[in-house]
Amino acid sequence: MRLSIITVCRNGEALIERTVRSVVSQDYPHIEYIIIDGNSTDGTLDIIRKFRNNIAVLVSEKDNGIYDAMNKGLTHATGDLVYFLNSGDYLASGQAIRDVIREIERCPQSGIFTGDVMYYDEVSAERWSGERKTPTDLMARVICHQAIIARKEVFDRYGGFDTRYRIYADYDWQLRAVLDNGVRVTYTGVLLACYLKAGKSDRVWKKYLPERREIVRKHASPGRMASYVLHYPGDGLRYIVHRIKGYFITES
Image 1 (cartoon, rainbow, N blue to C red):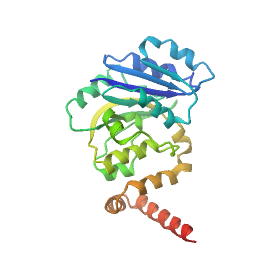
Image 2: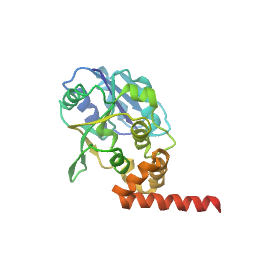
Image 3: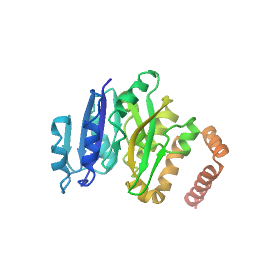
């Protein structure tokens, strides 16, 4: 089973080597490594080129943000599975991919597979589970893309990331696949990656909460929203209030 790992980066010379080294040192042999660089102006490309023999595709050009770059990576991916590991993040161990592939092979009916990530910065680390027992849990708790491996056919069938969303396009993709199209999700329990806390979504997520609300409204049926309010009353009611406010502002 061939896995396409896609790394997107721009001006990441302080972090990129650890990311790349974690991929090229995996003991799983069937990896296609794709790096999409956003026309870096620092030493990022010099570092990447040290590993050129282990990189199937290297593109360096201007893009329109992280999700545009991730979509570019998808156009080059030829693997059965796709995984995104961005600059600053790194695989948790040299056998992480072998371990997760073993679990994936046991579940031929599933299209999306989740694991765990170690959420870290310079002072602390915390293991986060990628398990979501129900679609309602997925609505309430975003799974970071570092914890997700998906079959390529899921992207081929339901599309990539909607670049209108600046922070939550991966969340939108998850709900589109699972809520709209019924793609089966399997939790593997494997620790996949260490995820750097200082990413863009961590710094500005509050600013983009309306984006997240819009995504939930787009994908949640009335029944799903009712279940959401029942199981997560605080979050659910905030979405309803936000929608009512939006209605009155539009009508006025």
